[in-house]
Length: 511
Image (cartoon, rainbow, N blue to C red; front, side, top):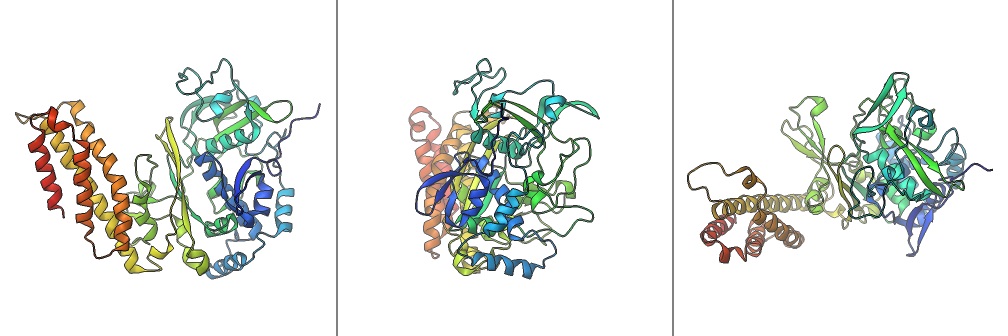
């Protein structure tokens, strides 16, 4: 019987949207060959789309020659501009040569794509297909919103299994996992994936070809004795040895996984029926991802200085746009927010592309260890006209409006909490409120829910009218949100009216 096969470079498993509006599934090879005719990826799982986009950028760097760390900044920018002038996309001969040189089969007996075949001997237990697929209950977890159970695990199509394989590599959980026995002994603890709980920002061009080149980070300086390789370009790593330095762009974008997986195929290779999921390394792989916003505190030790912006499904995404617009002061001794590294070279792009650049946002709201809440995606309008490099006045207005919205939003939180405590949990004798009263009050949660959608509409209006006072505009939104959130409270609580009147007065003063 022929061994099962699923060549990921040829099998259709990546949904894409073409410029003419039709959608199609393609393999790695065809995606890059036809990138100039593709508008965008159409993967239904945002964390999988984030992983696929990073992988495609690494492949594009190889094929285009933009992975050469010896190029000066000017030479690298000129080569990228020359490539963007080509209406036919990537050189087909280079694309074919690259994919012909490596193994892409998902079920290859010796080198399965992005997997470790040694797990079949090093792990005594399989994790199960439900552990592989995000969203399915597994183990003793209750099946609240899914029909899947470990007593009757349903196979998953091989292409979809690859989506979830990528999610594990980038967003995988930390903590207890299947035990793996290596020469160093038996261990069963995994570290979190490099993008766990992260919020990614990707420059989006008019075509996927433009997107890949625009989002390609400038290679870092050569690390002495280190080679910048993707996982499929090098031998299987020794899980007990220290990992190689995180060079850019290949290892930075594709080689920082802390998880090892092995998929078990159906006889025909069309489905995955089981899987091993365990740890790949016990070492940390710290690096600054080029698509993440970082909060930087120069006063902290280097290992604790950078903290990535976490994905939060309840946070309006437009609130992060100011960080993308402003270059930031990296010489500051005070904490500051640094925009993604991939955005620092956008000024070198052709003006026609810059004027159309949007930002694709992919977020996976997770805790730091095991819990997965929800994933989401968003798309901004073209933002280049507001960037600090293009229009300093527009960028300052953008920042001013964002800061005003945040200031009034924080004030709304404060006054709604104070009013709630005076009304629902009055502190008559100066004692601290009970523990449950220190949680986020329902009035505050409802007021936030009403305020931020209103503030977003006001924000875009303020950008069109620089003469309007931003504080006053957002204060009006906050007052309306507070009234809406507490409309029924006045009739139910004796102390509500005076407490809310005081809250409204504080909001009016903020103007």
